[in-house]
Amino acid sequence: MQRIPVASTNLASVGYESNSGTLEVQFRNGSTYQYAGVPEAVFSGLMNAASKGRYLDVFVKKVGYPVVRIA
Image 1 (cartoon, rainbow, N blue to C red):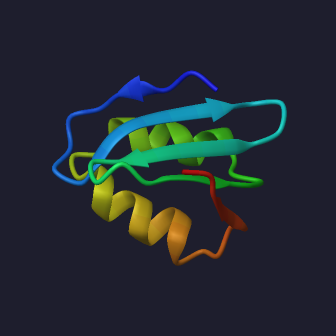
Image 2: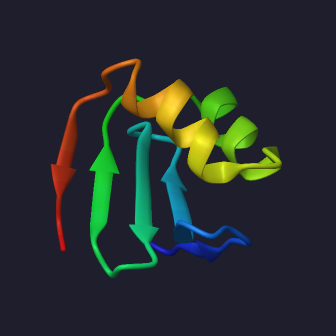
C-alpha cells in the first residue's frame, strides 16, 4: 500500500485502501500497523486533523478497529 508522508510528531506516513477500508499507519519509530474496516470519513478526518496522533488515538485505536502490526 502506498502511504503519504504526514506532518506529525508521532506518525510518519498514512495510507488507505478504500475497497477494503484498510488504514495503514507508519509511526516515526518505524513500526507499521494496519487497521481494518475503517470508514473513508475517518481516514479523511485523520488526514485533516491538526493533531494526527491524537485523532488516531481517539477515532481509530479507542474505537477498536481490528489491528495487525506488519512491521
